[in-house]
Length: 416
Image 1 (cartoon, one colour):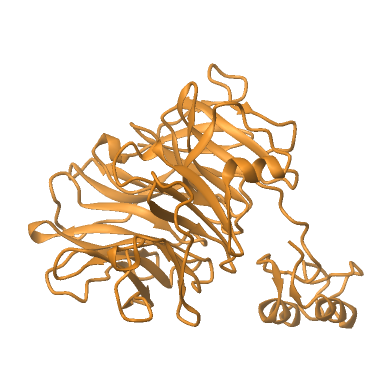
Image 2 (image 1 turned 45 degrees about the horizontal axis):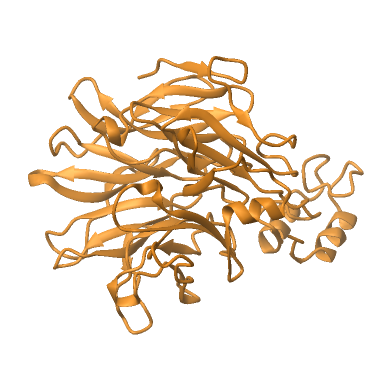
């Protein structure tokens, strides 16, 4: 499970970089096809420089310097389940592996620097060969969420952390299944689904282990929640019959917002898979409920407007090869500027990385969330009098009144 192989830029299967712009994570924008058929990228680090995913036989991560690095594991097509996750700084990958002692699958963390893979345990039961699977990890890399099996093949959402260990998140409907799909930066907010008493998947959120079902203003259930913003404020997910199968964005403070209906009548259902810090950028795809998964089309919703990924790339001066469609976006960096997934190409199904031009940061945005606000002020005041660090905004060697004035003068959202 810890063996690795690399496919770099100069190897047998090189990466295809379709612009002369900078590598992923730069400000100019770029597009990459990963050069190997059948890859499914599912998550990206905060700056987009490290991407994680799987193929039909194992999990992998990608960096511009190393290319593809395969790290073993048990992906869905090989009898496993779940998805690959990666933390914000691109150092830890979450994946599903085969526990050699039990012969069943289990969630695990892979440390990129050391190459070590650490299993997280299970509830002592399995359904066929599956005991536990990873569906996502927190931005700080300390928490994993997903699905764990109990007796009689009862599925339960779980949260694992290095502090609390493995926790069953349960279900509010006795005897019904649940699953966690994602969590926020510190792992305190978990989102996913639970089955209703008639078997329908309903969107659910767990805050510090306490579950709430996500509903419309009239109390109707929505479909499963698929992603949550880094601060835990915004949640996005699938539609249900009660809302016309439309995707949605929700927060406890703002309620439910229905995302636009499909622009293509033959692709009726929306699948939101990622949301940025302030809920203004949501990546999603539209497709039929039937295979193939790559038969749909990918979009980015920005402040209420829907943009096809190909059109958006062209508007940013990013060249997409002829015949390539970013049909199945599967994840997005927390800042909303790197989108990863699987594309239809003339050479077959390939993983893609779309790195949209990032805005220049603004002075005072110390937590890099696109806004100068209370957290940044608290950080600066906590560093008051120190002689180094990001809070020294004027570079004079000490955090003091001039830095405070600069921060207050930049208060509010940064220019996008």
